[in-house]
Image 1 (cartoon, one colour):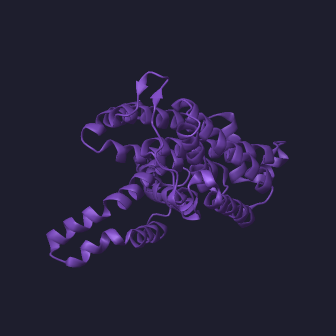
Image 2: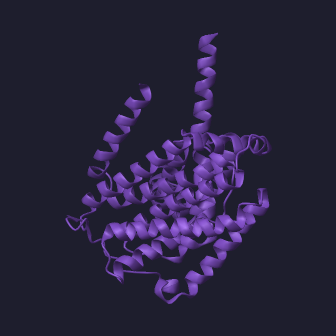
Image 3: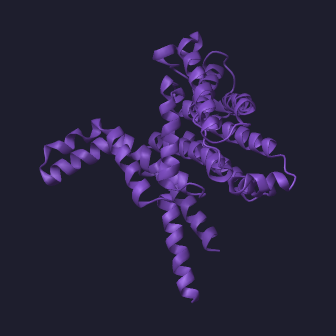
Length: 326
């Protein structure tokens, strides 16, 4: 009952948010929250650390942008093509990497993602270092004009909620329980007769497809796609979001994504405010030191919040309940 009330309150806040906060900034946060949740499905519930998720996000964005700008396809078809691009790359990458474990799996995904980065750098349709610019938003189902930021916000919110609901449903399904079993004790899952490689591959493709949906939606929102999204640093950023929020928790990656994106976009404003309050000019340079601040946050989380922010809160709540029962 408490969960249902919490979800209802959160949805009301999200519906009201664009009236007080810049809608494009909110949409960007929603896209990255979905991206982090998709990544968490793989690492938090299957135990696979991929360093290639930037490929799914970026290439889905490129293909969605190409579909809308050059091919002139409807908006919903562009989003579907972007999602399928992510899933297809995930299938190929998964087939090559899934039979390896630990650091070997991670390094294969990183190597393949970097290959795709150099393809994006050289391919003529991506625009190279200039990126793919001027992607039109078009009309949803040929009726709803997405030119308005407010209208597009509610479409993006619906996409993010649908993606999040699919992830939650997957986690609590029999398929999700097998993924958890693989993470906890893979040899035992094999001994019980489960085709572990197939389950891992399905989880990888699902995670890649949802990452692709996030990338395609992000391109639709911003109207461009650049090499930043296919670079390995984006894969590192989504790892950071998940660890800061809470690995293996449902809400953790959303919290982590909000914190990291807010820091990237608002750190200069925070620094200016601190400079005014404390009269220390050094704070004005904070806006140029985003990577240093995010790195510092990562170190603090590793040392003080081993389970991430949400993970630590849940652990404390669990201890409180245990004391209450005694």
